[in-house]
Length: 189
Image (cartoon, rainbow, N blue to C red; front, side, top):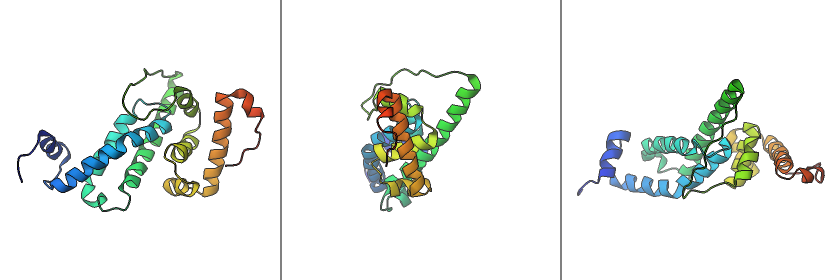
C-alpha cells in the first residue's frame, strides 16, 4: 500500500479508521468541502461562533466513524447536517439555561478564521431568537433549504416552519431596524 502518513496513523489510532485509503481520501475531500458551511450553520443556530467548531468537529468525527456506510448515501452531507443541527440546538438550549441561571450575558472575543462568517449584527440579532426559530432561520437562509426540506430536517410541519420564518423575520427586522418593524405588520414567508 505504500508509506502511511502521520495523518493516516493518527486517524487510525484516534478514530479507529481502517486501512482503506480510498474511503479515507473520500472523507478527507468531504470534510474540506463541507466544514466551513457546517460551522456557519452551527454558528447561526448557536448565535455565536464560539463552540461551533467543536460541535462540527464532533459531528465530523461521528461521520468518519461511519464513513464506510455514509460514503454510499446519496447525501452524506444531510446526515452530518442533522447531527450538527441537533447538537447545536441542544447546546443553545443548555447555554440559555446557564445564562438564565447565572444572570449574565457572555461576551466572547471574535474568532478570526478563514471560515464563513456571519455579520456581527445579524449574529447578535439571531441570538435573541428562540432556539427553534433560530434553527429554522439558519437552515432556510444559511443552508438555503426549502420550507419542505427544513420541515423534514427538523421533523415538524411545513406550516410550523413558515410560522417560525415569518415571526423570525419580523423579530430580526425589529432588532436590526426598529423603524421597519412598523412598516410590515403582516409578513408572509
